[in-house]
Image (cartoon, rainbow, N blue to C red; front, top):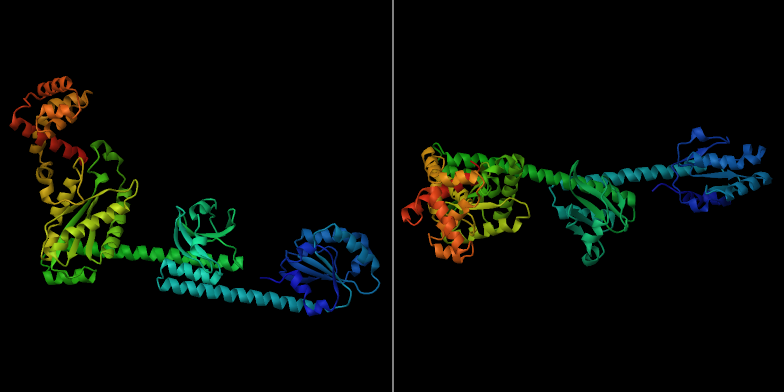
Length: 548
């Protein structure tokens, strides 16, 4: 801190001059930036603010009536205070200064004994320079400490703890939802520090830079890069030195932002490397199993006796929405969802002490080769993986469907099974009411076969011919016909069972089914006819759900 007028008056050299405060005692703690000696009564143009003015008052003695104007001009120029050396018979000046100072908040001090102004100037300037040097050294120490934390890729908790130690007060890192991500209590209990945290935090508005705000006057600084802020650092209790605390918080925030960017870059580099190897394994072109295993091991996939191919399909990117939503898809959102899934999968596999290769295989689909130490662990591992995804799925987040290929004994065979897993995942995502954590080919059966054939023009023509009457009627506004047919076929052609379900009253149901038969030009009681219609309806649903 810069020296104050009060600390300067306590210097031996000034105490010997018998200082007396005439006015402005409440402002004696004003910081002094520099010392200025002048006998002029108008020094407005010579001051820039924060100066302690020293004068013998000889000019003021000539016309004491100018005292009020003189003090007003000094205060207006931003001077910190005035020290006047009144030695000898200077009663008029003393009276004038006392009267002027009584009506002003500007600090005015008179000295009864002669003093060497140069000695005051040297002493005070030495104090100022020493403080500035101390600030430079403190800033250097803070900079070096947090630079080292950046080089060491220190964790969030370590950075927060370092900041708390340097500030000498508790520090909390919170996200944009006012949840405490990390904290260092520093002398207080955690229960006291974090008591009713979310409510207290919401009453404290955020600043674009460092500053104090809220009813508790929290010192805070945002964390992030430019417009991509993701949190803020907070000192929820008054620090000893606000200037130092602000400096530490700013450097800590920079370190957290840099480390997060470095982690993201590292993850992206790892994902790119895995994607390159993933594509190579799916199209080996002479790549041996030994070389494939060696390359995969360099990216973290452990050598194992078993490997299982897994595919993740984003349901909301084209498998559970009707074709009319096709134009509403957001490619950027899809990429962000895939990136988030890759990061989540890496964390989930690590939490299970497992290893895997993951990569995006096409828009809305992510592939994985999961290493298993024993075949008996396949279902348990897949269940934990699926549960981890479900646990981290928030409102509005992407829903992923898991398709699993056959367990393989070699890495290259598992890579070759990714297409099977992707087909299962894509097909399973079209199920009207998915109830499994993951799916295999035996779970999708006929629907899986139809998913493979749905793009064949002959298959398309078959589905359209079978359903032509209903599709034309629905196009004319007679809705609910396809839904009725679907429910009837799902009930196995049992009209009584469908009526008991409460979907429609028995007379209405029979009448509506008769209308369906008329539109279709075929009877619904015939088993082969129902099978044909069921296949056509499944094809129609598959094409609609995939956005084709």
